[in-house]
Length: 395
Ligand SMILES: NC(=O)c1ccc[n+]([C@@H]2O[C@H](COP(=O)([O-])OP(=O)(O)OC[C@H]3O[C@@H](n4cnc5c(N)ncnc54)[C@H](O)[C@@H]3O)[C@@H](O)[C@H]2O)c1
Ligand SMILES: [Zn+2]
Ligand SMILES: [Zn+2]
Image 1 (cartoon, rainbow, N blue to C red):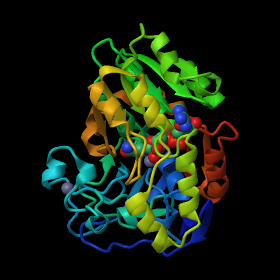
Image 2 (cartoon, protein in one colour; image 1 turned 90 degrees about the vertical axis):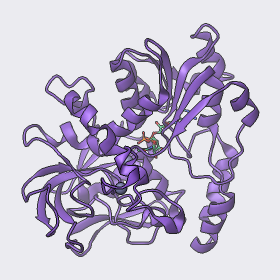
Image 3 (cartoon, rainbow, N blue to C red; image 1 turned 60 degrees about the vertical axis):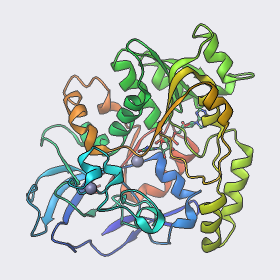
Image 4 (cartoon, protein in one colour; image 1 turned 90 degrees about the horizontal axis):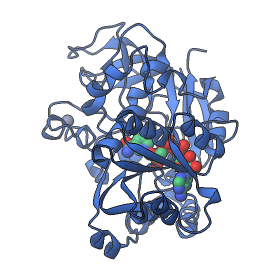
């Protein structure tokens, strides 16, 4: 089959690889009909390179049709239409039972001290072949799927794999009071969807980014926006000026570790990329630091006693944090990978024909899988209006 593979820093290629097979009786094989590229894939593309091996199959936002099931799979039949969550979870351990599927005790990657195994997400998360491919092997398939109706195009349901539950969890964790306000930093697919979810729930939303078409997309849905590239001085001052001097009740950081405007972190990332993998892993496991511009802004913007919800991925092990400010402002901090199956039942009712979250028109590009290298490039470089790119393995 054809699959999108990681070959080196900023090097992606579509290769012929062996078709996946049932390896455990709890597996299923899914024929992929749509598979999206995520901002998280961009961390692999660059910063997390030391944890990747040439040939690793990427992708964790797939959906398709069940092609084959193992002997112990009870909840699926061949021909079912399914979305596959980005994390692999068993559904029955203590963590899964409390709605923390990204901490699944059955699939945790203990060797690296990581939570649940993720599709296509490096050695840190179990080196599981990903879903940017024609076929995908799904472990723990009885639970690691969301069945969706046969009607409506893939774009209606595809984002249940990641974008929707991630944005949803970001808003839940932000704990915005009734009628309250939230600043969303970063208007990539995750921040954009978080704005939509928060606005849908009646909150005041201020979105911040520096890419004109991303700002315009969110503004077109009635969200207030701040163009970071036009801010002269502190973003906190700009937000405070719009919120009676107080800051917003909550801030969602949908940027993460590769924030624009963090020279020290950027240098650390570039230096690590020049080291051999084994050495770079040690450096990142002990002394790695993130680019913290967005998190620093978040801490500044949030009102006293407010909540920070970090949904952008951080990976540093030695990040300097302004503990005095965090403590003094009495900030509540919540974060983590999204627990996809935890939120899917809440989101499904919003995926009807009235489409309140605008999922039908969410993708800016749908390209054949064979064009993945160009797709990654335009997504990373923010060219050609690329915000969300869906790859089509059937084209
Ligand atoms: N927690 C989870 O489960 C989960 C799931 C999916 C994605 N993520 C993470 O969420 C983040 C966003 O994902 P995405 O797909 O939207 O990616 P993206 O890279 O398209 O979006 C990031 C956006 O942040 C903007 N940005 C950069 N620096 C900024 C700054 N200092 N202030 C404000 N905006 C800034 C960029 O211009 C870009 O539009 C990534 O870190 C990704 O890894 C987390
Ligand atoms: Zn993703
Ligand atoms: Zn579990």
